[in-house]
Image: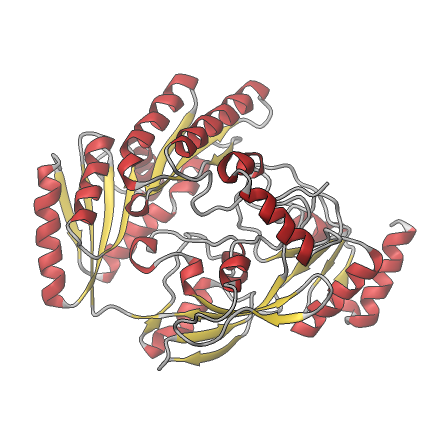
Length: 460
């Protein structure tokens, strides 16, 4: 331990309890990586705050000693967001995991950032409510807000930004602010909720979140529909959305992914491009939606559609979808997964998915395509040997080609995973001179560039 780190550690122990501050190598290693393929880098110190004031005190020490701070939830991010590129202090929010208030009549909850999605939904169930954003991983709500997470249900309920009413944020100098209120709408002031959600820890640390929740649907029906081609499946989704059917989830899983699903989940699904669907509503409305959807998919050459109405059947279906990444990881031991993440206008989606599949084949890579196709977002799950420089180069080439295809058609380089390290190089291409505005905001709110430096924007 260098003398400067010892001085900072001692300063932190003056404002926190001794057990809340550690320089243990094993703990630091756990906070030097996420679920991505990006290289590990260790923080110098890890702290475990228990309150907003603790976080404020850490930020004051950070400013005094000019040492970076990196917020950390569960490390489930996919673009290297929590990797401390310059070392520094990692703030682990796992001890700030309380559900502070459930306002069931207002459909709102107030939580600390370390609360997980599953933890919240377990508490909400007795109130007949649920939190809608489902990124697959059991991520923390603070981390989900930091990356503007979404997932399978975003086509009906929206993404993380749509659920946030208010954030308590500790700024770079230790100041504590609130970004919103409890009202359903406001025309007052700048929209700070929108600014901070998705800021990836570069503008402040979230210490409380007030979130919108929803009533548990009266009836839920899931379905699995198989198609001869990816184009048929995607065009079916476009027709479903154009028909105004309020579908809750619509996921695309391509043929190689269905094969891997059957191996890992021990299912016997048809190994063709497949849509996983889910409908929420009352009994009469749901029957109408299901009947109409069945007619639409038939018009797009659907080769078979099977419905799951009981809870066990629906759970099996969505567990298979959520476990797809692990299906590939277990199917190719020794390889690391890289996940692409682009989003396009729905009219451009079929072409983008076909282009991605052709490019995977052209480059001789192993991978499957899945996506939240109801909102134009899809991923390629690539398995690569991190010791094979040629394979890594091909994977990077694929990612860049897919991103450029999306940007040229009015899309974005990341629909939900965020910028982190992996998508930073595309920011100027996507945002143009608007990136300069983002840099100005970063300099204004974090003039010393101490909050998760060199993520989203680069100031040095």
